[in-house]
Structures are given as structure tokens and as C-alpha cells.
Image: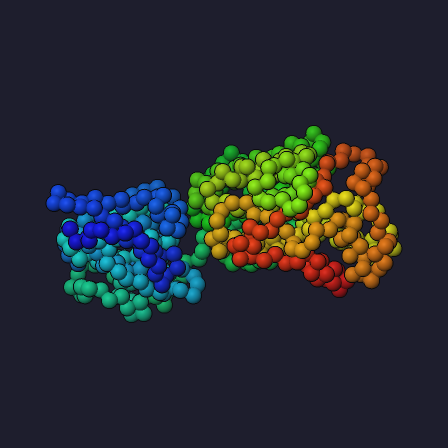
Length: 473
């Protein structure tokens, strides 16, 4: 037994992002030894991603010097040895600034290493009868796509303890390419649903047109279909952003609208959550202030009780609960969204320019949220690895009524803001002929939680000023 007893469980970072060494406590006496080779609760407490292993493999090696090639598989691995000792070499083959970075160390029964997808993994046995074991989070498949690096690559320049000329290497491993000829492995795929909507357009701007980004509309993918689980090779995906929703608040109060709202805002989200949970995907779901009744004094925190008033709010609340069943989820709750296409600010701008003096609701308060801010917040949460859960995301600053915002738009366009007349919600809808959904009077969402992750939402008034200036241009 080459492992040392008495180590404390410890996490050790490496130069390769996501590649983490763990020292493991091993307990033994004259009869032998015992260790917890994988203990999910303790590993997560040390910050390891909950990577969801589904298959355990063991490679037994008779002879000292057995050398296995540098392979980067499309899954994450927890590597350790049950008996014996290895020299391990890992090379980052992922796209990005750390491509080609090398890390080496010895692994015995008192040490393990977490190897993220896209990092090339290889080893050389230093003792006879070495049992090399690894947990993986996808089932082995002959159709899986691998990347390889030659063991003798001059750029990586791995300092093998036993020269490669003195060990047996498979013909396949000898034929693997040098680093200059390796195509970097792209990140896991990102799927954005609702790509043609206001937020979808902002997400296109934020995430760009890289080959691993997929934008889909309702016509491209039916998330409520029975074969949803087979619609994609989901293990290739790292993120699903659900920017699709039924948002016709008043029409949702009709029989047909109610059915459509529940299908899009609740049933579809439940289907996405099942896919995300089954395949270790992060799900981002965009929620609404309408899950609250607006009676709270002050700002709504993320954990305020759900009290939706109308059908739209009820379906959004149900969608929040469905999304939360995915282990990796971010529920981004927002309000008063402004982006490309028709919206309140554009309408007020048009009325001001056409000489129309509007009556605008003055007893509902909140903050505008511009779609680039939502898109940036989503990217921040995912890329920073913020704790999963619900986050409020709106513009920053003081709350205002719709009428106050309308007056700002008039003023920013060079018109008299007093042309806007504040009215109550009841007065505004008094002449409506169809069903009218109840609205929360207070849509003020607390931003402390998203701020604690290092994200600072843009002030709503500054965003409004820039947006109106764009309309004038």
C-alpha cells in the first residue's frame, strides 16, 4: 500500500480550470485499509460540482509502465486508484486561453482528481497490479466524440517517469495528433428558447453566433412533445435558457387563453425541467412579478410567498415551481420588460410625437427592466457559477409608476410631461370590452441577492434615457 494514512479531506486547485485534486482520508491498520472513495455530500461541501455519475469503470494494469493515451471524452470523470500508483498527465484541450495547459501528479489510494469534459486524461502505472478507477456522468457509447493528443507531443512536453521508448503504447495512441493539429473542444451547447421574442433577441446579442449556441423558436422545438427526451443529444448541452412564454395577460383570462398560458408557462417548463435534471443541464427560466399580489409594503424578496392574482400569474408561479425541480436551475424573476418590438416606452414615444395626450396608470409601481440587463444577468449567473435558485433582476433605482415613466419619456423627447394624465387602474380599464386581468399594484423587486453575486443591474432611468435616445435617432 503506497498511500499515506491520516490525510484530511482537502481540495487542491490546478492550473487547468475545473481540474481539481482531492486528498482523501485513508484509515488502516495491520489488516488493511478503508477509504471513502466518493462521498457526494462531503465533495459538494468542498465546492465540487454535482456532476451526477452514472457509470463506474475500472482498468486493471499488470505491469509497471503501462501507459494510456491522452484522451478527452465528452463527459466528466472522478479518477482514483483502488490499488497501486500512477503518474497522471492532464492537458486542457478545450477552446480558450488555457488550451494546451498541462498538469501532472501522482495518484495513489489517498488521492483523487476530478477531470472536467474536454480535458485530456492519461496515465502511466508506477506499480504492478494497479487498479485505475473512474466514475463518469454519461454512459459509454461507441458514437461518442473524442479528442486525442499524442503522448510524445513536444509542446505539452509531459515528463513521463518512464521514457515512452521503454513502454508499450498502443498503435492508436501512437497515431494521435500533435497539439498544433488538435481541434479545440467547444463548450457544451447552449439552447435559447423563445429566440424571436424581445428577450430572445437580447440573448442573441449577448451570446453571439458561436457554433455551440442554438437559438430556437416554437416552430423549431416543441417542448411539450412526448419525444422531448429524444429531441436532442442532451448530454451535449450545458445550458437551456427558457425565454419563451405566453404573455397575453388579459387574453389569458379567456378559455382559450387559459389553456395556452398553462401549456406554455407551466407544462412546457415542467418538460424542460425533466430534461435538464435527467442530463445535468442548467435550466434558466424567466419569471415575472405577477407571481405576487402586489400588496407587500416595500420590495419583494425572492422567497416572498407566491400569491398570483390572475391566470397569467398563476401559470408563471406554476412554472417557477416546475423549474425549481431541476437540480441546476436559475429562476430569473423580472418586471416591466422593455426590449425590441412593441412595448410601453415605444408607445409613449409614439403618442408624444403624434401629439396625443395619454391617460396612464398611476397607482402601479415598479421598475423598468431592459432586456440587455436580463441577458447579461443570465450570462453572469451561469458563467460565474452563482448558487442555484431564484434571483430578482430589474433595473436599479427608485420605483416609479407607469405614469411617471410616461412623463419621463415625454420629457426625454422634448415634449411637455404634463400632457400625461395619471389615472387609477380601475379608471384606465373602465371602458374595456373584454376580460381584464388583475395587476399587482406593487412590482418592486429586491435586488440584494443578485448584487451579492457581483452583478450590478443598470439604473433603470439611465437605460430609459439611452433607449429613448435610440428611438429618436
